[in-house]
Length: 166
Image (cartoon, rainbow, N blue to C red; front, side):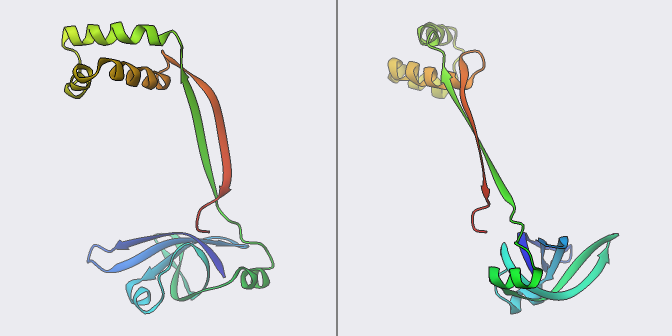
């Protein structure tokens, strides 16, 4: 009984289909190999809780479990068999909010005018500038939040939670 954390479909150099998967349970982490014949006769393998059967083999000096059969299991079945909670992988989301410095607004117009006069604008920006100068100035001002010279970090947030779908 394992928690499959990732599944990657691949092909051998000869074109034979297989999946490499990573799994874990109370005893540790294990690499899984599922050959095409097994994949064709079974339900799609995706991250989640699975009961697996097969045999442990060595490949390039690394242990891998070659899966012969697999079936979905419930969390209660996992808990009963492993006498432990599944170790769910965590997803980390980092969000940084920035803000443009107020004095940058006064510098945007003259900078854009100078770039246009010298012909140093990219074609797309030059088209936007000629169509609507005020809109292009506002766009550049807003993008100033992303520059270390014209913007500052307002807040940094980190969220730790389960990987969606597990």
